[in-house]
Length: 238
Ligand SMILES: [Fe+2]
Image (tube, rainbow, N blue to C red):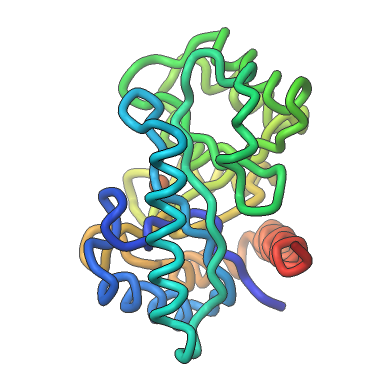
């Protein structure tokens, strides 16, 4: 059974992730050592500063470069996606499918972090699924635990209007562990991902997180691994 890391900043020189092809390859080696068989590259898309077509072109070029560099190396398969920051009107955006994980209707969405979440944001997330038919994966849900609308985020997940992704390092860190374990215990987490940025800043810590979960949260971990494998099958079939 393969494992897909659905959230990573491994593409070279695109965002605050890998800053060279060499760093991208070192991170991919780390992914492989963590048992990852496929990596979805999800560079940040910031709607306030990124123009959509220019962003897509830039990412496609970096993706092509990295694919060419690793073609004779035994490293995980690469797929292109984006980590899309929420913007007002996102649920009406007719070109949102361009930012989905390549060949799918799955979108990795980052909610606002520095400004509070509002009920209209919650409603828009719901509409992305119901009106545009796009499956939303909420990136690092644990980050919003202190937001006053956190309960509404949880409701979205429970209702099946969005899926939850959490970061592997949040499971390990004593600061965020309580929140993430509560999400895992509740069976609310679909994807555990690295959100890898660099070997020093946020490396791939999936294995470490899995070891921590494997006894007490075995059924929940197994569910995440199965969903990951299902996604990999879907990607391979694209
Ligand atoms: Fe990220």
